[in-house]
Image 1 (cartoon, helix red, strand yellow):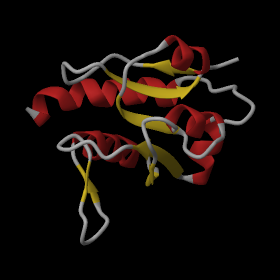
Image 2 (cartoon, helix red, strand yellow):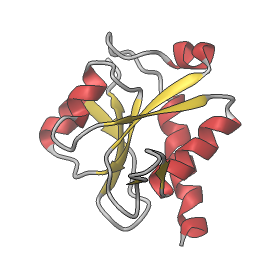
Image 3 (cartoon, helix red, strand yellow):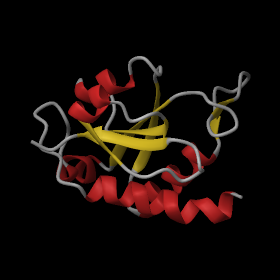
Image 4 (cartoon, one colour):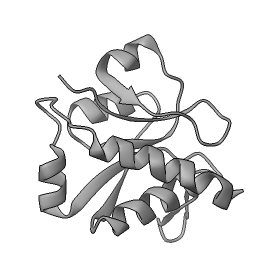
Length: 132
């Protein structure tokens, strides 16, 4: 199943990274590329995102796909754990550059972020600050 959806996930993430981010709090694409690091917000949601209780390491399609893509772009991936209730605020306050996880696109979230299509059949979206 992972192989079937990884192409969609990678395409969606590439679109997000390539989008010109102009929110005053958000880092621009140029700033992300210059720093050679991208901060990816995530929420534990097994099996899509899992956190090993012994090592604190992350795994799952919502971790492995973005990590692979961003490493191909020469970026180190810093994972930032967040909560469902606060991930949109995390984007707005520059705690992370993109959010990768399943989430419903609500009018409130649409007002502050952009999203991609789902990759798993779930109402899955990837958020980043809305330009402008």
